[in-house]
Length: 389
Image 1 (spheres, helix red, strand yellow):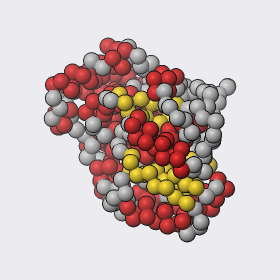
Image 2 (cartoon, helix red, strand yellow):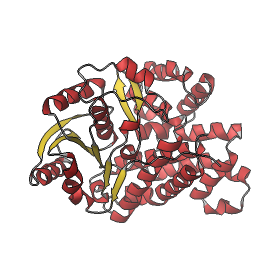
Image 3 (cartoon, one colour):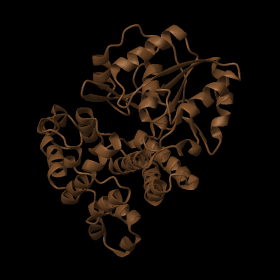
Image 4 (cartoon, helix red, strand yellow):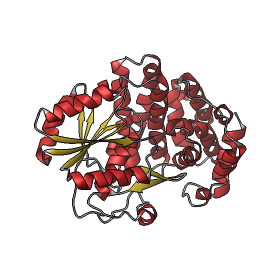
């Protein structure tokens, strides 16, 4: 047996762990670029708390609050300009996946005067690639997630948009140096965002579990992540102030991120990025649009029967006595029922998309370059997702 496994990020997990931020940051120096979305409710109180905590300990803080969902190359360029002027000693990201992805990219490109986006998007495409550095100055990153889904704080990937295209930048330097995982920070998440980010975590775990690059270590991590999401996400959606379910969900999304970083994704993620880039539909909701039909595709192929059966039994323990074939055939319906339960089961019609947008999705040139199936197979998953609800 031979395999590789990587987990370079130092984790700080638990309620009140954010209180340790100043001590964690102190070795890096006094100047902090603080990266967030707009400094507004419901996160303004948290942002003010973080800035006060650092400034009271002698840190100089520049707040870059320009991040938006699906962060763009223009936002990154503005952040790099601020970073180069400020000469930060480290970057602190507090927020969801878009915030952490932006901060990762700022660290990767710090001290550059010009960014060659064509080179970046065409070169850093392999999650297991050992790429050269872009900058001659290494900049540490501390990531503090406020959603429980992306796992970005423990992965080497950053998704940056240019026009309608969402591009994933893989680089070893994209790993955070530290991740502070404080479940209390999830308490302001509304129901729908709890559901969509939580399903994103399930998707990471499932896709990395069935990826050919999965190893015994990553598989065990992915299975545990799926178990946690299935058991705690419905309660987290229904009871948004339940700290125990939030804690389990944060643990699950971190594990799912570790599995994803080591094994890689499957078709739903690039398909969801095509949908989100064209329509603006959130990442988790776009995943939910294609996931049941993606599973049906694998049910027809019968190439992942044993793994589909394992996941089906996570949803329904009554299938423990069923054959793998019988259990695997139940999975698509079980996932659909789960999406209904967490109020995330929508159709493309619910989003009132124009026919032009639908056509742009199913005819996306990206479908011909993905390593997860033929263009016809991937187009078929999209068409089934559009027509079968």
